[in-house]
Amino acid sequence: MLTVALPKGELLKNSIRLLQSVGLDFSGFLDSGNRQLQIPDARGQAKGLLVRAQDVPVYVEYGQAQLGMVGYDVLKEKKPQVAQVVDLQFGYCRMSVAVKAASAYKSPLDLPAHGRVASKYVNCAREYFQGLDLPVEIVPLYGSVELGPITGMSEAIVDIVSTGKTLRENGLVEIATLYESTARLIVHPLSYRLNMGNLQGLVEKLRSEV
Image (cartoon, one colour):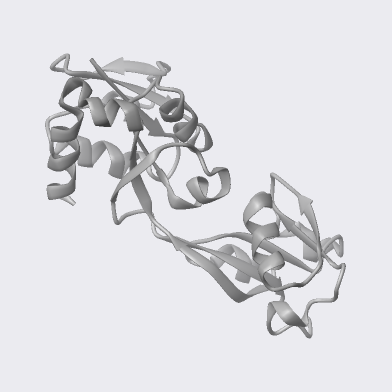
């Protein structure tokens, strides 16, 4: 039986809707009264795991799930040993550098050398500024990173932006985009090569639905 790792949060509804289109029903996870973290498909073809988005690639990499759905931002930050097989084309967002709107910084290269940049995407932020050859201190924050520039703890942030509303409401503005992100279908490489549970066929069905 195949196991599918599904992400809690904004990607869940679209992930479940897509799986329903190929005959796998995990809509029980959308029931507000449900507290189960693992449920079987109604037809008994597969089971679903409901996990934090950051944990989806971990379950797939270690083979506890053969299939998963997760944002490209998570994959780029974690660089797990999984195969990305389909761009699911939902969950659009972008990874951006943002600063206080009232600041003099109009591009990342305007930031001071050895200044501070707050981010929960530590690896992506570090890689980006190394590519600019601009030495900065990356401050790891896992809550509201917008507070970094607001409180003066950092000159800038690197964070996921969807509509930009949160930035605007907190007096911040984007000055650069690192990359754009959408949800991706990922598979456990060995399971895919061995076609466990007709995994290749399921992936093709999902690709055609997208």
